[in-house]
Amino acid sequence: MSDTEKKLGYEYEEGARYVAYVSSYTQTKDQKYGIRIYDVDMEKGYLYEKKQIEITNSSYVTISHNRKFLYSITDLGVESFRILPDGDLQFLNRASINGMRGSHLSTDYEDEFLFVSGYHDGKITVLRLNEDGSVGEITDELFLKGLGSIAERNFRPHVQCVKMTRDNKYLCAADLGMDHVNVYSLNRKTGRIKQCAILHSELESAPRHMKFSKDGHYLYVVHELKNKIDVYFYYERDGAPDFEKIQSISTLDDKNSKGSAASALNFSSDFKYLISSNAGNNSVVIYSIDPDNGFLTKILCLPISGEYPKDAALFPDDRHLVSLNHESNTMTFFKVDLEKGLLIMSGKEISIPKPNVIIFHKLSDVTE
Image (cartoon, rainbow, N blue to C red):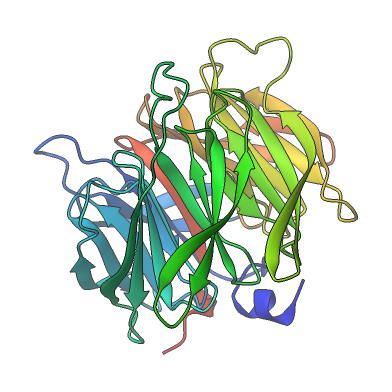
């Protein structure tokens, strides 16, 4: 792991204090707190709520790479927060994305731009970030075009996820509706993007979420409808991005493979394991990652005691796991033995309305 990654807090530090940020929908008048902050008990593998943040329908949250700011989707666009030393969030500003509510957001690796994907309107929005962490002006807006398979929802663009390559040169956008990942070059002066490549997925597979390996050479794309992960080897050749598909692997066990939809991706804190989950059969799947070639090997696929696990993540110590169960309005907790492939439920479930995503954050990373 690089010195930069250690500095930014990607490596687990025993004895350090952590908080977790959980985003959720606010679908009734009584629900107005779209982000909850939890203290993390690493020994018990459990979360204790410490504060609720008022925000509407937080579809997704992300933390800047300098670990100082948190950004969230909201009905009115995006909101920015400063992360305080105790993990609390201080509101900075709200910015419009000039479109329908987004589904995912991320920053580039220099924290100069914020990218927002639009599932509902098939749009990519690029916004400039200010030095104080607040969100600035829109620098580019791109509505994707095309006609898909006209099967269920796969008939027009639905941009589900946007993620920069780790060399900070290209923006990848997973279009769930059109069954491909678009790749764009980023002009850092103007903040505008230009398409330069496309990764075609299997018809009606619905690419949903993406993660790059810690060295940036491997791209993992999970497909919602086909319940599989495609692995690509990424490199730059003659000033252009090149992605070579090297593996496809199921997110399910063969015994229980009908009526399921794969969800988000997360790494373990040491980047040696990849985690996903499946709605329908309501399971979590964990893979080991071969450090030499990026290949995935499934080590477990087990039930999570909830409905529609929209996100599942290992605790920073990689000894516990939490599942965010969107339809049963719960979070469930498990002890994990990655070497033996074991998952054992531990602690009582926590009630939370329509949870979407969880991020663990090490408090010692925050500097003034």
